[in-house]
Image 1 (tube, helix red, strand yellow):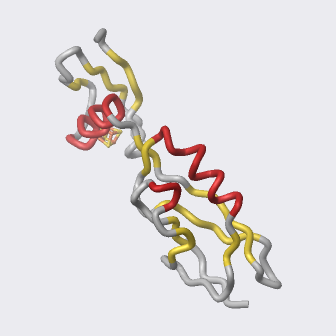
Image 2 (image 1 turned 90 degrees about the horizontal axis):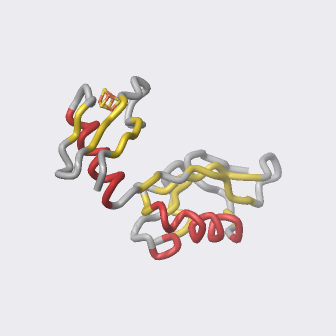
Amino acid sequence: MATKELTCIICPRGCHLSVDENMNVTGNSCPRGAAYAKQELTNPTRTITSTVRCDSKLLEVCPVKTKDPIPKGKIFDVMAAINAAKVTIPVHIGDVVIKNVAETGTDLVSTREILE
Ligand code: SF4
């Protein structure tokens, strides 16, 4: 594997990272950058934020996110599940909207309270 270049997205500083063929990381200003680079090159993951339709009189959609990062290869399946789902109110922050969404092992949860 040739040296890979990537930008750390863990914090706004956005360090420019280089990873050599032995998975040695340089350019990171803190250990989180090295951990991010190794994960990104072996099993890249993302936390998904989106919205789900809901039956509120006041809001058409409820904001949601995956509780934990999911594998990048599962993003399409997760978005399909999100697009097919509907939230029944009342809903509170942290309520599970879809358990084990798209068999990722993590839940899709509400990030907003909607009571009516
Ligand atoms: S390496 Fe550390 S300081 Fe640099 S962007 Fe990543 S988290 Fe931020």
